[in-house]
Image (cartoon, rainbow, N blue to C red; front, side, top):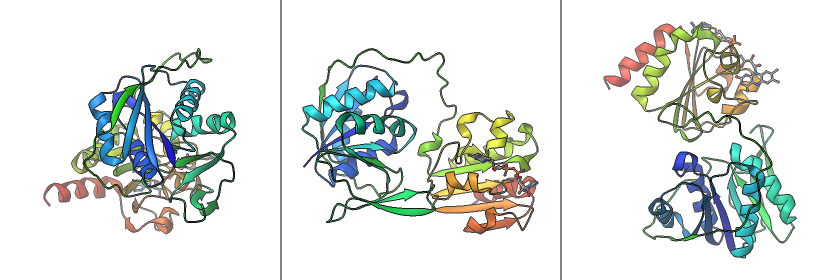
Length: 308
Ligand code: FAD
């Protein structure tokens, strides 16, 4: 079976979720990966470690989902791929339905497992509150892989990288402004996340969140009202209307745990909640709860970890 995996390369860096998609694909068949933009060929060749045999590199730096969808369809045809895999992240969610419609191929959004012997794939549905079992009956299928669903195993192979120069047409959208995410650690890729909400009272108090994140090597996140009122940038907003994340550790301070917030974080492997209110709904979703004042607990936690 031939598999095409689309590799997202934000800022020329191959995302962890894209590497997971390559490894996942290699468990299904022979993987051709497709990347675009300004990314190092050596880094692409390293995808061989995760099971890619070939990598196609398109010079276009477009971020237009319609053009990317065309690029993927042409690459899938060139690789005779019957399974196309994308990461189920913001970019993948915008491209995959277009590829699905263009190729008349069934789409499995939010996959968390490999297809079983009957072709059934487990998926997250209702923001991870329920599981689906999906089987595609069309000759070709598109799979959107939920980030952080599968453990990676590294080999020693090197992939062959070739240029791919198929015509993808003009962009139908005008990008007026691109705001690059600040900080060293991308929230969508972070293993550890320190997040805070309105309980922190104001933007001037975020220093203690950033300090703890720095000590842990974590990304920072926030609840929606915090982004809405401008205390934090919107790219940090997690939840139903923000980014959905799946880190190994999510520390939430001064966040009530409303259902819309939980929708974006309840797939985290371990959740630690710090809240003054013992009745805060977040405690029901927490693995560890601290009933306490974030203004005392966050600095104390930071000191304790530093001295560990
Ligand atoms: P609050 O609800 O004000 O909670 C603050 C918490 O801090 C309280 O639990 C309080 O006990 C605690 N606290 C206060 N002081 C301290 C202290 N010193 N130390 C420790 N704890 C303290 N929200 C999201 O986050 N993401 C979304 O994507 C999202 N999407 C939404 C979509 C829709 C359609 C709607 C209607 C709402 C959405 N919301 C979303 C908003 C959501 O319903 C909640 O209003 C929001 O999550 C609450 O944010 P918060 O917990 O920071 O603030």
